[in-house]
Structure formats: structure tokens, C-alpha cells
Length: 452
Image (cartoon, rainbow, N blue to C red; front, side, top):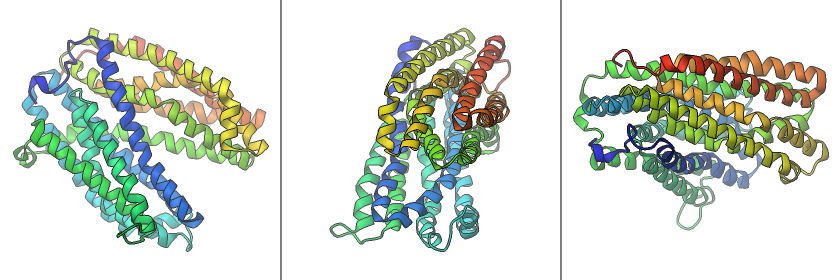
């Protein structure tokens, strides 16, 4: 982990540095999103029963991926802090122990997942028509889960050094491998057997295997970011340090799908068109916020390294510039969706009521994306400043003290349109409140007082 192997996050100009880290991350995020999208597309070509079966797996796979992401966040923050302090030996040990922690957690999860597969998915609503197909898919998915956590955490190690390009390339190639193998194994093209939904699972696990092998080669042989001797060393202290950030970060990540489930149930009271409008709107929202998610991934190691080096002024300047850009960017996205809302709705549905619900979502909610981006970036910055519980508290307050109550009140007064308006108002209030609080607390939070 020599100096020329990672970006100079401690001295290089802030805006060009964050820009050069954010842009590759966008492609990496899109590549990760494509995994499920490609699987869903090809499985949908088999039939409706298979598509329903794989749809049941999404909540479970999302939870497990969020656990991996939480460990990755904890890893990136502690490695970045150690690099900032100039303790590269400790950074290497943290990287090695983070991977062993991830695999140690993933293997039992995979075993327990397979042992509880039938009752879990029956609880989620799967019936005898889909449970066999779910078993065909998830048995392999659970078995290969430990392969997924290696690139998820390994990518975080690279990002902690300022390298966002290599993780994006690896995940893009892994996505390509998955996309090539999917039709070959699902439909039995050429010499390959026709395996149906099981073929999709095999393609996914093989692509994870490629990504894991590529990350280990880069980390151990090319970048010297860890050694096998480091992996065998004492791990307890590093595991606890990573988990102190990983557990709150994972909790924060899980708040959004949990709140979305509640809001979907609220929308269902007004008919399938309201649910469809909310569902389409949230998927468009995921695309609209890709830039912000990428920026948060870049901001985390930047703030983490400077926190380790005690560069509090540089931290405050970076966060201020990131928040300003994010707010202006999302205002532009909101304007674009406002102008194109009717066209976007027509792409997803020709049914009049559903079309109208999508239009209302795109009219009301995107205006709050700028405020929502303030919350997202503030939470990632608080993680990097070793204050993850503050980020968790902000997310809980935004979703459960503001979004759900205001959406319920709005729906009570103005049906599903009020629900959408309540979501927007909650984002606006949360963004303003977070900005005011952060402006007051950031000078103190950005100063490292104790050894971490």
C-alpha cells in the first residue's frame, strides 16, 4: 500500500478529486443493478411462474446484500482513517481481517438460509406453485453468498485508497459474465444444458466467483494491500472496530426497504394503479439518485482519510461542496422529470389510471430529491467521521417520524396524491433539519480527538 498506489486524498484539489472518484463509481453501481435486472429479464422469458418465484427472492437478497454493504462501509472507513494517519501496516491488516469477517459471517448465513428456506418463503407468501422454483434458485444463491461478500468488501478496500475505477471495472466484467451465461444456461444454447431458473443462479454464482478471484488477485498480488500472513493474524480488535460502524450502517440501509413496504401497503388501499404509480416512481427514483449514491461512496474514503489526518477544515469544505452540487444536480433532475413526466408514464403504462398515478408521483416527489440528497451525503459523512449512530438516527427520523406519518395524513386528506405529497414534504423537512444540525455540529465532529 505504497504512496503511489492510491490517490492523494489529503492534498489534491477537492473538486477534481471527488469528481474523478465519483464518475467510475456510477458505472459500478449500474453494473450491480444490472445483475438483478438481467436475471429478471431472462427468467421472465421462461414464464410468469418463474418470474414470480424470483421476485419472492428480492427482499431476502436485498437484506443480505445490505449486510455485505454494511461490512464494506465499516471496512472502508477504518482503512481510510488509517491511511490518513500514515499507518499503512495497520491498514493492510484491517483489509485482511475485514475479508475474513465477511466470509465468517456469510458462510453461516448461507447454511441457515438453506435450512430455513421453505418456511421463510412460505411466510413471505410463496405457495406450492413457486416454492420448488425458489428452492432451485436460492439453494445455489445461499451456497455462493460467501463469494459475493469478497468483492463487496474487497471493493471497499480499494475505494478506501481512493481507487474507484478498478472496482467498477471488475463489477462491470462480472455483470457481463452473468449476462452471457444467463441465456446459455437458462435456455440450453449450444453445448450447455437447459437448466431454467437454476441456470440463472449458476450464472450469478459463477460471476461472483470471477469477481472474488479478480479482487483477491488485485488486493494481494498487484496492489499489495494485504498478505496471507495478515489474514492469519489476531482479528478480534479489527472485527470489533469494523462492526461498530457496519452494524449501524446496515441498519440504516435496511430502513429504506422497510419503509417502502409500509408505503406500498398504504398505496394498496387506493387500488393497483396507486401501487403501480408508487412502484414505477421508486424505480425511477433509484436511477435519479445514482449520482448521489456514487458521490457518497467517493465522499466516504475522502472524509475518512482526512479525518485520520485530522484535516478538519478540508473535511468541512469537501462536505459543503458535495452538498451544494448534489442539491443543484437533483433540482435539475426534478425539472427534467417534471417536463418529461407524461412521456415517462406512457413508457410504463397505457392504462389511464396507472398513467395518471405515475405522472402525479413524478410531479410531486422529485422536487424533494435535492433535500433527500442532503440526508444521504450527510449520513455517509457521519459514517466516515466514525459517528454512524447519528446517521442511523437521522434515517429513522426521516422515514418513521416524518415520511410514514406525513404520507398517512396526506393519503387521508387527498388519497394517493396526498401520500406522494407527504413523502416529498418529509424529504424536504428532513433535508433542512439535517443541514441545520450538521452545520452546527460538523466543526466539532470533524476533529479527531482519540485514536481509532
